[in-house]
Image (tube, rainbow, N blue to C red; front, top):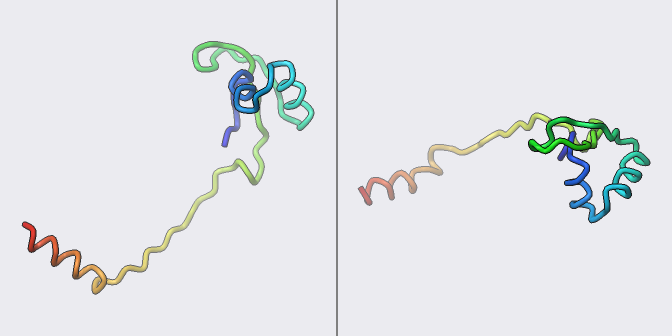
Length: 81
């Protein structure tokens, strides 16, 4: 998800003209600001406030593979060498 996106790119994604997307973004509480460097082009950017939908969350992954489950794979590798 985006926290900052160029107004032009957001308009392309939403299939809206710049004026329409600006009004829509402001109506949902997103800030539209001037920027000097938007992909090296300059222009306006839309700042999306951080919420539960677009914030980074750590993810804990637990692997539970036993050695016995790997014996066939290890065996195949030894035969093909």
